[in-house]
Image (tube, rainbow, N blue to C red; front, top):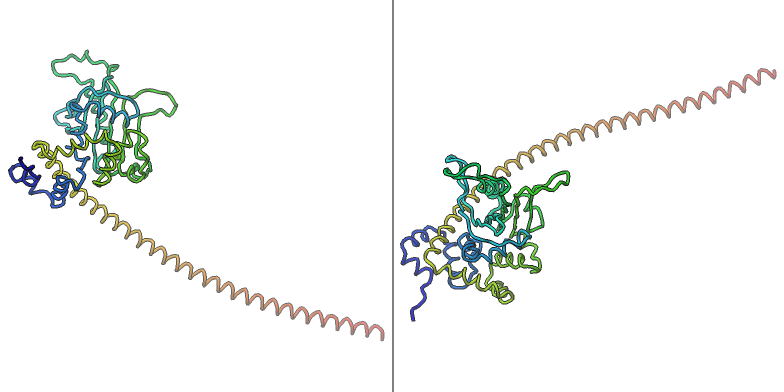
Length: 354
């Protein structure tokens, strides 16, 4: 019986795989070996694994159910579309989409996996969505412009699954957000562009009951512990085949190559992100220090004004005391004058009697 080769043995026998493997971090290599040994859950959010699980040309029903429970309406995936976005000119920046599919009713769905939400701002989502609209009425060089019919343009859905949310989504407690364009008058028009954001970090924080298929999928994609995954699969056996496929991807040479490339590129992104965070942290620290200096300066000014006020209050108190003393002196003199006036009146009465 042929002994199954471990991932390290497979890599050593393949120069191309080994070239990428040797440039990976020790941490990433260790994780891959632990997955191969059954000690770790594979990274289900790795582009290669995620796209393999939901390959629209192999697992149409699975992807249909997944998208349906996210956008809140039942859809049926027909086939994948060219993932290279439409460019307005040769000078336009190219767009490579993750999972682009067409539904049975002609609508288009695009599923994007994003590790860091900060890399998928609203502007990027809008560009991707607009690209899906544009490709529907673009015509080739040999086609006639008269073939364009705007009434044939179908809705487009941009679905963004974030491992770590950012911005306003990070501030919210919700783990799924649905966006569409609305009028301020209440008038209803279908303006075709829909956006759905799924925040896995918020899902992990909230840990809702597995009430529906969406919650089960999000829990499955979020599990990192082997024991927790075993428990989940025992309770949700329909996910076993999905998990088995993710494990088997480590046995396929082409998929391993794609996965290694994805992981290596992700390391570069993380390193870049860390540098960005460090720069942002330094700027923030500098800004905080400047504000601290301003506050200390204002505090000193307030202390000085407080001292001045206390001095003025002391002077006023002193003047008040002086005034009270003068008042007492005046009252004393007034009393003396009244006594003398009474004495004079008494003497006058005596003189009148004589």
